[in-house]
Length: 556
Ligand code: VG1
Ligand code: CO
Image (tube, rainbow, N blue to C red; front, side):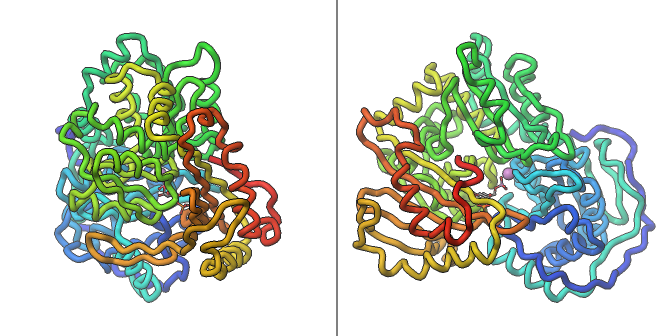
């Protein structure tokens, strides 16, 4: 909220200057914006070139309002000062900035929408480590609050290849720590509480009374903010508004280097949380979020919920949540996400869309009202309330379902499996492999696709094999080469793709799933249930021969 304090800023007379520059050749955004090491980003003109390239491609920029904020990682404040001076020089009329430069990705998406702005810049490398030796990132979200389309990010990239000048006014540093309204050159700068509007939105969506009742009845949870951006949001909403015990939020203070950890909520990097939820006296519920607050991991007492299952369970229980009282229009999942959500959509008689990896592909479907819920296997879940995945929202949705059903997390998931069957799922990541080897591996897979259908691999007959291409059902845009998939007659799948968020070498992701209707097999560990598919996937891609890697770095 804007406090009635004197303007923090007054630099009306600042001269605008045009600075000569020359292109960098590596500014193509990936799955979610441009991500590079801090070292790369802090080179002179690097950030400036990318931001000016974006400005040059945006219609209606002059006179518009932009939202600017980030996850608080190292270089966040410096980058915000630069972007503000550039926005002022490019004729932006107003900038809305989170206090201390902080905005979680979903909170930024919400502000862009609520304030009817032209869009915004979100500064984050999400789950990648931070600090001077870590990563930094920037992405542009449009007026709907969602990540820029592929067509637009390609336009930014094309522009970055020919840019010869950027515009920036000269002005002293702004005090980002004080809420209020001031001027930077001709541009109004409004520094806002990063949490208030987001918390208000959550109050509209969920049955807060029911969740308060849950906590009042002794329900205990731990939320691991991983020293990333969600700390202040989680403290305000869980502890202050919902009455969760003080101390429910751990690692709640955002740090520039996330305390030296990967702010990536999975079983490997959120080990502290996993330990808290193990053992007899463990709390009822655990959750963690990532660097920029858009991912979520949820776990029950001694019970892990895979993100694909989480999407399916939330979809099946959506009617507990006031925002979805009218039912779901449809569901969407990224291609490598398991088909568990499709089974729920079937039972509800609503469509389930399969999109390429990355939240930018959900935007058109959400805008057109064709889906209400969407998710990815990478700990991303979201809905039509914003145009980003939303970590804390997903945790609140789980709490709302738990409050309505009065069952444990494990009971809810096991009941879901009994009804729909269990989809065993695993993702194996091979990080930092040599780019050439990764490209050869993918090329090898692609070369064999046509010969696979009808063949038997490790006892399963291949039904189809392709390189996923997507035609957006709303705007007709086409995206090619989004991942190699091998689908078997029994519905089991192997998917291969290279990460588009890494900053060094290549990361190979292999996704495996199979559906198991037989109740007596539901107690298997996913690793046992998928062992034969894993073997088949490794052999088919010649992973060891081409990369020398015998084991994945992370399994989720
Ligand atoms: C990864 C995930 C993808 C997610 C993306 C951004 O991309 O797999 O599902 O949308 O990260 O998430 P990739 O290309 O590395 O597989 V976030 O929270 O890092 O912005
Ligand atoms: Co993220």
